[in-house]
Length: 159
Image 1: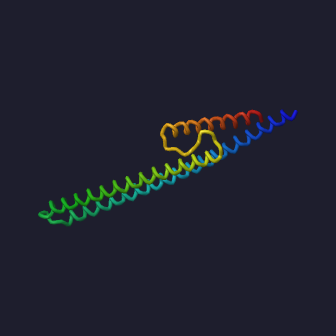
Image 2: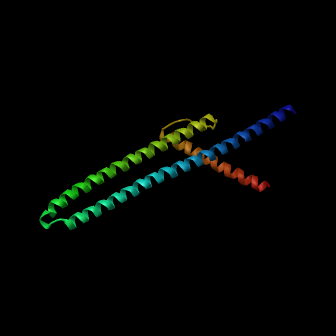
């Protein structure tokens, strides 16, 4: 009888650990979604700032051309072209810097998630940047998520 009680306790402990892992994954997924949304909004804000800069420069150039004497127009247009190119270069650099920041933040988030899952004892998780290992971990997460959904559906069906 003690042998059955021990097996039962192990099964209950396994179920509790599985439930903790499901809760942990749900929390990590929520944090990831919030992070992605925040980074997306930061990128949108930068794009909007750039759109405003472009509009303001176009307006400034139009006003300058209207006030310019015809014989000075070629020089003004050349200067405006240089100003436009400089601004576009700055915008590209700011966009590139933002994209790099986003990638670094997402990479940090992945490493944090891997570390958290490893510390929680979820099999197959450890901090890595190896693309094949990352793909394997993503597949494991998808499998765990599907198992969780099936478990929830089975629990509802039992009720």
